[in-house]
Image 1: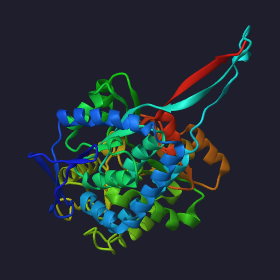
Image 2: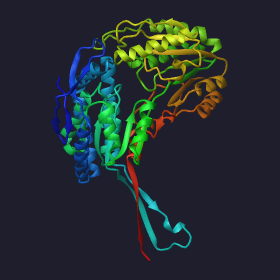
Image 3: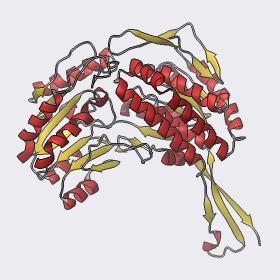
Image 4: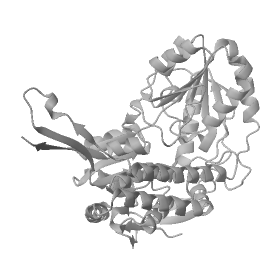
Length: 476
């Protein structure tokens, strides 16, 4: 499949191309152009014209077009899901789930297009002011740069592009070089549904060239980015005076309280599913598990028992539960982190073996030292680290030993413990009797500390993607 950039509705090809590989066996899925600063400049030029055309669309127009795009996407579910699996390596069932969520995200964005409003400002509440009335409105920013990740290239692009278009902005999308083909398909669907071709642009290529040029362009009024902390910091240092929304990662922690013995099998399965979905390549994957000492051995036994039921292999096989990680380099890094933890004293209770270049067995380690990367960093692979604690207080302390703060979870029947956990854990989302991997697309989603800035979820993203214009009338 020969890919292309999409600029103003025109397919742009280049001699220099990047191969996209099926992570499971490294077969070639297709190619994309290796875009550069000139391509980005052209895309922003066009997007500025697209923004002017977006001004001609009413809120109802934007609602109608996004709704139609959601229907088109739904009608092409399996075709899009198969492409997702080939690009990302997630199982076909996971891909179908992502398409369903993307349809929902566009639908939510469509609904929010009708709800963008301001309110009256009470000028006469200021001393000495009479005869003045007015209000504020939320207005679109202009051109928004959307830099999207490899793990959920369809839905996370919808989380950026859907609200941006709902609010009346135009977009330039720079997808991951690993997973660009499905993003191009999405852009074509949005144009087919009725958005001006100039308003939806995709520039493919590497972050060092295409991404950097998009960030540096002063005409781009906002960058919305999902990726690593390190890249997020670089973006903000280079982008200058513009708005930013940053979703930067996590090593999500979950605590299992001493009163959960009767539910332990159910909890162990949920924790493992949260750690091994998409081979652990989810920002809110369960990575660090803290189990009350009285339940520790029983929990490990039930978790290992469940892991043995998981089928690992070709993600195109409908019966497979877990596929590969994105590429060989990612697999190398994951194995390096596992080996470092083991060398420092951690114990392997299952997994920790490489089946192929990119397929790693679902892995559970226990007794992980707090100074190794598996505890401190984001593994982004099929690895769960389980440690003992003696109280909810200790669990809170250990979970907060992280530069990240995206989401966390607790399983408890103790209302006081649940409230303590929710109050004291430093994270943007706290899940009570649920794993931190839980997310619905309408909720405010984002982190504290180095997990990011701003919130996703269409209604919350629209607040980030608009600015307030105050209007005052002197009637005296």
